Figure: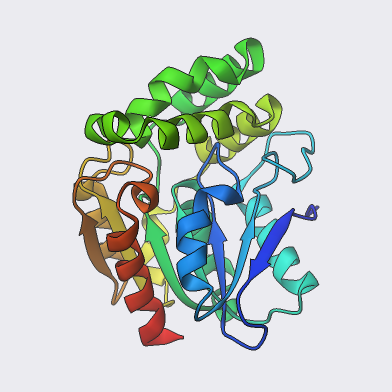
Length: 256
């Protein structure tokens, strides 16, 4: 059963709609910079994934199909029939499943810092157990290195602190249940079925969704392309907001 996602809407009422889907461990605020740029042209809808931020925390485990159901229910509740979609990391996993199960709802899609399978399922199940037993603070230090390069951490400590605070404020059970969802996520064999116009965006220094892995994702989706953002790790939208926005706006502008 879907849950009613907390969300925020910006931009002109009559403009084409773009949904922004956040990464695991973040809220809609991760999109502040990109949403401000896009809202000059599009009706921008941001949301907190179930188990995160202001959205409900139903009992887990969750599945990607369930997370996709939440997004479709949100669109339905707002009277949105078709929309562009930009998803980063977990948000990109949601986008892949959306494109495979509800392609008629999508006008264009940007998959950022994401892959069709996030490693061995055991790693996600172990992380879920860790946060259930020890809380979210245990993830603070290791996450800094995954999300941001050392150069960015040195130059923008306030941004890093803001994101780590966002992470540690997430409900532990909600986060763990999304880890369960990622443990069961693997669409490698179905990427050729995606018909939505797609662009894949990678961070040059991302240890989670590496450039080669993102390249394989782009190669497997018919008609898609790959843009690599230099000097960016996993949260490429924050590390290099101007380059990230160019990649997104160019693709959306071509298809919306």
